[in-house]
Length: 125
Image 1 (cartoon, rainbow, N blue to C red):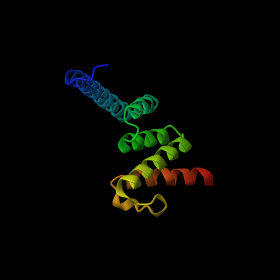
Image 2 (cartoon, one colour; image 1 turned 60 degrees about the horizontal axis):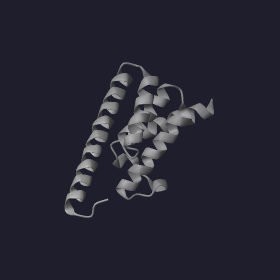
Image 3 (cartoon, one colour; image 1 turned 180 degrees about the vertical axis):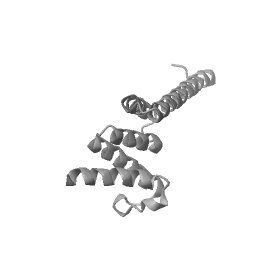
Image 4 (cartoon, helix red, strand yellow; image 1 turned 120 degrees about the vertical axis):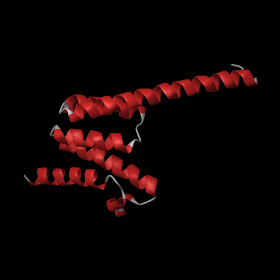
C-alpha cells in the first residue's frame, strides 16, 4: 500500500482500465444479445442479456430487452419481474413514485405495458 501520489495514480489508472474493460464487455454482450434476439434465438438472447445485466444491473434497456425476451420464451412471471424492476428504475430516475407512475412520460412505456398486459391475459386463461 502506497500513500504517495504515484501509488494513487497507478491505482486509479488500473481502476479506469478495469472500468473500460467492463464497459467494452457490457457493450459486446448487449450487442450479441440483440443479434440473437433479432434472429429468434431467444434462449441465447436471454442468457446474454442476463450476463450484460450483471455488468450494468441498473441499465433499463437491458432489463426491458430481457423482459421482452422472457415473454417470447413464455416466461411471463420472469418477464413481469424484469419489467417491474425497469419501471422502478425509471421512476427512481424521474423522481416519480412507482404507484403513481405515468409511463407515457417514458420512452419505455410500451414495453412495460406489453409485459404487464400479457401477464394479465395469462392469469385470466
